[in-house]
Image (tube, rainbow, N blue to C red; front, side, top):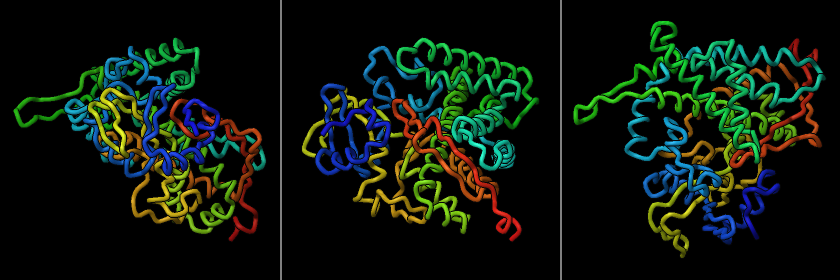
Length: 408
């Protein structure tokens, strides 16, 4: 059996292949595409925690790692997923103060308002695209507000980031141009905040400008403008794409498992558990790539120094050794050990808490607005992005609350 992360099967969720890999080839080697892969939960967790042996400095996707001209930090300065210690540690120490208590408390209010405003646009039985018209847009607006992007500029930033991610094969110049324009935009925003520090002191950009600490040697550290721009770019992508794919998969799986939707409708306190189960069952990121910095012996084989390694999150999240009945979608599931959905260790997903907050609030507001919904599964379009799992298009018809239910 072959695992090809560019195949249609992969984009559809290669769960049969993943099961074979976990059982028969826990260290898989694809000679033609030039990578090794780990698929068991324990192996993926261990590698994610060891960012010295398994470096992200040269990329986190297969195309990046197989491109000798791609150098993570030089390509995307400030994007922490490309940093290894000690620079990664310095950036984490500086950016962990980016979210002030006031900013976080205001974010939930903002997300709830944005969610309800978008949902009000979609009438009973009127079909719309759940991902294109809703989940990508309200999340982008929410993260833009957190960063301090003015309302007049939010559509521009969203379209540029969308071009960067989904320009497609053969359109690398378009993607690179979009990234450059986003950096130029954030650079101008940083300059404006430095010139007017009191204009919006609680937004992320202003907090990052102020961030500083003194290390044990008495040296003061702060962020450069390039690092702030890279952080903002990564946060924007993590805070929008993760949630958009998570929510798109959520409505599809709830439509396929109506018993789970009824259970959630009857008991909304299950929403946080449902968010975790959706992430386990259909994680937004299929894998994370690493460069191996030394020979590593595992499963009676050796991954040689310099090799490309894929850590298969989607496979680890369905490991029978950790999760009973892993192919069953169950929003009441109690996991003894956590899924790998948002990563673990130093490179835990930057937008993890934002994604959970956005997903929770969105499901709460959907439950208030809709009794049920219908999805045209014949027109679902899978995300064709190198390491994402989910849907680009989900045609959905909402069913509003029946009269008896709404008057209860």
